[in-house]
Figure 1 (tube, helix red, strand yellow):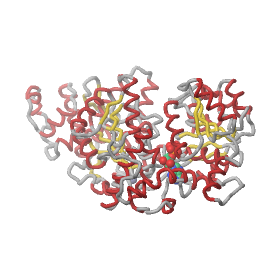
Figure 2: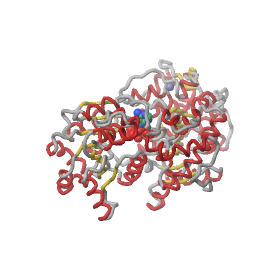
Figure 3: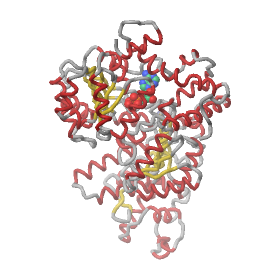
Figure 4: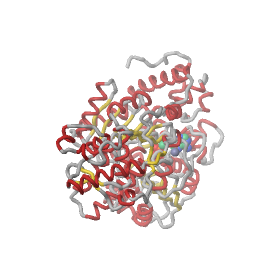
Length: 627
Ligand code: ADP
Ligand code: ZN
């Protein structure tokens, strides 16, 4: 009898000698009600001995696709995972639900390795995580051949792609597993969405007979919001206070300097923030990462160096205070929010300066022309997402080739922006640029042009006698903020270009069509005075009744103490979704706990009484609340 059969029959006495079904394992081990999306079809394919290629977004539930079959099939599931630093957490999480899991990697000493190897050979492991470099060695393969292998799972399978950014040479040798173990099912999984990667995985891992599962890349629980950037730090603090108080979040910025300053500012505002970038000592970075995973409510302010492989499921918000360089990057970074499926927010503040700066960075980049063109195309796609008056999610998904309907959970759906005809202001601005160039051979940046249009006398306008220009003061009907919005949108649409070191503004090939009146320029209203996020807020706040919210906080506090005592991240004890369900259902008996998502047999036995105590307002017997 397999281990899972023992777990299932031992506790429920329903299936004494037959192997458990996938659904039995899902219920009794993981405590989940039903499979999600294509999980069931994938699991069945593997249990039946077939191969699979799985493309599923972050948080989609890839792990269960190989964990459940490993428990149902005879033998040990071998999981190839490139992220050695995270193996310990993965194994801890499995052990917490009663699964016999272990790993083999270079962080272990000989004795530890030896005991894992012996357990494997004795058939005492359900899952064994190995680093790819280990699996590519002949001695490891010989060792594995002496035990029983239930399946091979190749996680982060896009690492096999030489053109991707996470290429690992050791992944290339994983194709050999097909020849060596033709009868062992193999499953390759990734969250990378492109067709090219999909083809490479199939080919290089010799998965020509595999069934393919491509999930929707939508992350419906993430609310996408993009706001005009005015005072980024203040906006960020307001955002965190309103929506993310006490919650784990990531704030992304482009430079180390901005990261440091922003983290310091958040701290000065009483927000528990830590900086993270490649310039910090690796021990500091390690500590920050570990605190982020283990403590509740830490905000990490980081460059994109932070996040790859961070499995933390309860990141409630990802904020960008600088414009990401591509939609792929944005999708990947925002995807770190809400892996647990709970409501989460992706918030981006973006302004004129971002466009100017990034166009300049591309102009000055050392790469060849083709490289600059690629970067430009990436930026244009990102700008189109920022400036769209349609659903953000529809825009995002269509970028990945997936059609969709307006989502109802992004800023443009919740609070549809008004569109106004910006043709005349655009003409006023462009003709000012033309006159300065033609009449005086001068070019200026946005600030000075806006002063001219608004007829605002400054030392510079006087010095250049710009008061005598025909366009002086013709734009006094718009505020400075509105003008900045006009400039930004013209830049985003490539109807205006920035030039040189100072980011002065000039015409593009398309500007003439606007000046001649042949082309209209619809613009997004800047929501400076609109009640920007009130509706959005109601949707994203967890909708708990006041009393339940209090209980939820008490449960979180209890979880924090237990996690600390056991030295594991809080989510390994219970996820937020489970605590929320406990807070609303208020179970008063061990039996009543079975109805709650995420409580399997093992956790019910370990923590059931404590949960009931917290619900009843008692301090659990074997616990001190002094942490
Ligand atoms: P991925 O590896 O695809 O990013 P995970 O496997 O980490 O996603 O799963 C994301 C979250 O969803 C985890 O918290 C997991 O426990 C939860 N989850 C996965 N499948 C189910 C399911 N069928 N029912 C309930 N929760 C699930
Ligand atoms: Zn939408």
